[in-house]
Length: 124
Image 1 (cartoon, helix red, strand yellow):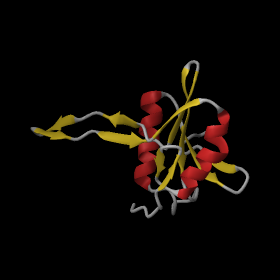
Image 2 (cartoon, rainbow, N blue to C red; image 1 turned 120 degrees about the horizontal axis):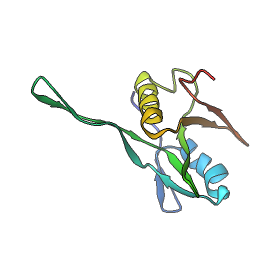
Image 3 (cartoon, rainbow, N blue to C red; image 1 turned 180 degrees about the horizontal axis):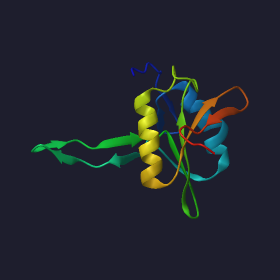
Image 4 (cartoon, one colour; image 1 turned 90 degrees about the horizontal axis):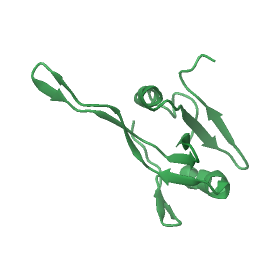
C-alpha cells in the first residue's frame, strides 16, 4: 500500500504523518513513560527454500511504550480502522508480531480529543 502522509518534525523526532504527530502530542508525550518511535522488529527470520534464501519479514512500529517490566503497548497509528486504512500485509505483520513477542499491536486513529482503537485478529 502506498502512503502519502506528510512528514512532521517535532521534539527531534520525524513522524511519518500529522496523525502520528498528533497521537504523540496528545497521548504518548503526556504519559511521561519511556517510549521509542519507529523501532524495527523481526517478525519472521530468513529461511532456505529450494537452495535459495528467503528474506525475513520486519515490522516497524509507530510507538512502543515501556513500563517497569518492559514493553507495555505497541501502537500503530492509522487514518481509518477499515480495510482502506489497513492493508492485508499490515494485518499479517500484526499477527506475526503478536505471536513472536506476545503483545498485540494496538491500532489507533486519533480524533480531536481522544482516539479510537482496535485489536485485529483476536476472538475475545
